[in-house]
Image 1 (cartoon, one colour):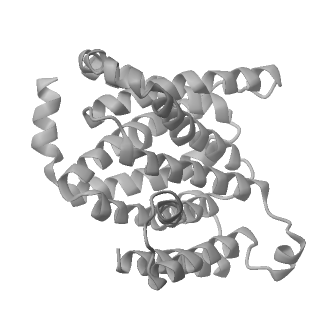
Image 2 (cartoon, rainbow, N blue to C red; image 1 turned 180 degrees about the vertical axis):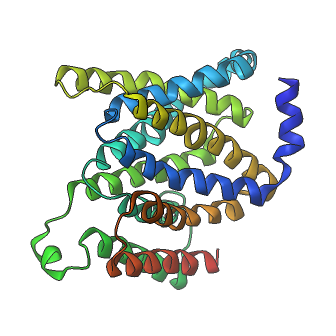
Length: 301
């Protein structure tokens, strides 16, 4: 634990580097989701990624977790809901959506999370949004709609949305709710709370894994599937979360949250370079609207 604390104070002292890597790892998560198709089923990937996280974190924070148990017990309902929706629900839907939509779409949709958080702040925390923020929300959501209907008015009129895009948007709503919940998390060390959430995520993913097995759709990892699993377990699930927690501590949540806006940029570029996915005009237009809307919404924060 002393080694971890030394790294926390020293090596993990570069906020911009840590937050930039966080966005890169999260952008790569969409690529991993697409690479997992045919190599490992969504719920196997969701469950086993948290096995990796728990296996790494529990030896490091187990003692502190036991000391924090009275606090967690008093906040058990919110902790369970945070783990279910923020980790299991988000990732389960995200990986299932990867079977039906492109990595470019997956990453661009994630650009809606900061604006969804802003909407939640207005609805549930009494934040008074200025006109520029409202305009930013509208522009970002317009970008999401443009991508989901592939820039086609005919698809919009017939409401023929890709089910993968719908699942991705629901996943983003779940993660926005998780982000709002972090405002009232228990007053215990961030890494300890993260470990508790990871345990909840693993346990809550087991019924989904059982359902997948019962329906005959379970697929255990191939060699390539194990490589994908190690990536999502060690980088987006573990290091990115730790880096983000530390970045928030160093420069505050408002400034750190801006780096989430890089996720769709990194993800779209990685999808084109690594997967060879086409980058159509409606992707460019949707990405510009999402990032432009976020910039407007954040301008007067």
